[in-house]
Image 1: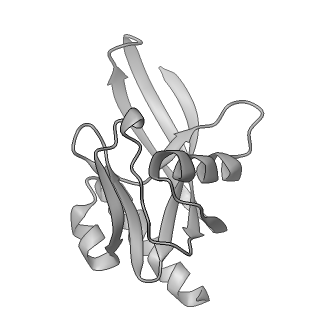
Image 2: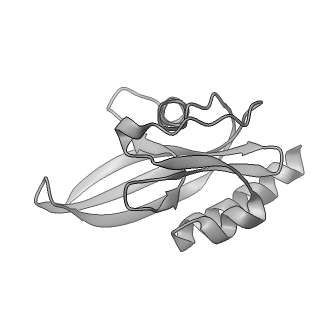
Image 3: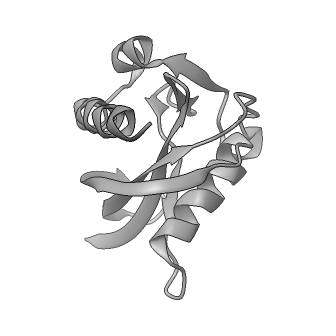
Length: 137
């Protein structure tokens, strides 16, 4: 199995959170693979910018998730291990990157986002991130 270390961001604008819709029509948070010399926090910021066109600031790390899938192109199973960061932005403008196969995206009220997010572990992560975020703002 190929194991990949990744980093991603849960970005808040007020009481709304950034979600992107991928080519499988899944609603998710921006994330990407960490190359050997990159810092996870920098990768998370880069992916938020690249995938959603959003400039954000990291507030704090919030946790880790893992998921496995079978890569058809690699012909083997892959395990993505993601470290997540809570972020804040000063603009609610989103430009989903079509070249990265994102068809839609935006900032959604947290209650709506909890119903939209495709995976239960992302839902749990969002609830925890929002609770901690609200404590500090």
